[in-house]
Length: 454
Image: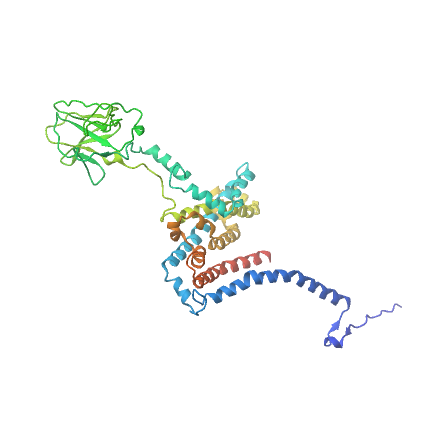
């Protein structure tokens, strides 16, 4: 018969308050706890020094005045909604939160779906993701140059001017102006007309200055006056400037050249009855005119300033322009994350839908997007958190005169506190407001991550 010996009961240590001592097991567990605390403690200290203390200090500082000596209660928070510059920052932040994450999530989804059908998908993803390796400082400098209003410097306006020139010819004489008291009057709309009326059989000479001779068209020839027939009005549009000096104002002298390509109109009773274009020598001719009095007019289009492109960094477009730079940087990030979610979708569901007769748009709208909803939500919320604290691009791209038109909460907080405002009480209140706006998105993201891991 086998005798079974029961293990000795656990020893109770009276010095430990009567708790049971399991011997080596308890000591090993205590040792592991101490090691864990030793590893976590430096991190906790850093978090306390770099996160918790600044947050608590900012909250307390937001209740004091600019000097930090007088308690003002909630006045700084009230000033946020009274100061026009701060209200502009709140409005621009709202635009950023709504527009940028929505566009980025949509672009990332479209590109992730399209990349699956591209042969060189990896190279394409690498190309789109490369801007993420560029710092916001470098990206801001790049786009500041790209948005330059001068077409000779800004690539976007150079392209805009080129496209505009394809569909609409620009004026050849934007700097031309008529001599005073020489028979030509400038109208409010920028056009020129003869001060005196002319009749068929008469000729007129229309002299202009302000055009550098070297900028005349290559086909410009020496000006020549023509004789008008009985039912004609003839004339010459010329550069009333004699190289080397001399010459008579208002008269065609030797060496003076015509202004070719100008549009000239014969106007009677406020209505244009004939149109002509000056030849290489500046001459023009209206034929088959009825008897009567006419005014010779040169439309404003002849003198319109050249198209200079779009004022990308003006007050109206500066925020959309900076959002465009942000899209360039972060589109690759959204595409890669959504692409990772797309690769994990069950292919059998997609193939089953295609076999049932669904086209690609129906598969995308009714199957792909609903299955990707959790990934799209995470990407959207992450981008919302990111745009709430955008600072570098706005501070670098927006020129000084329009800095206030482009400001958001992060830049306004810096400007108020350190950029000349010297009001760290209001700046701290803006920082607390920014924190309160970011916290819900962060809590949402953390909960979703926990649910996805459970």
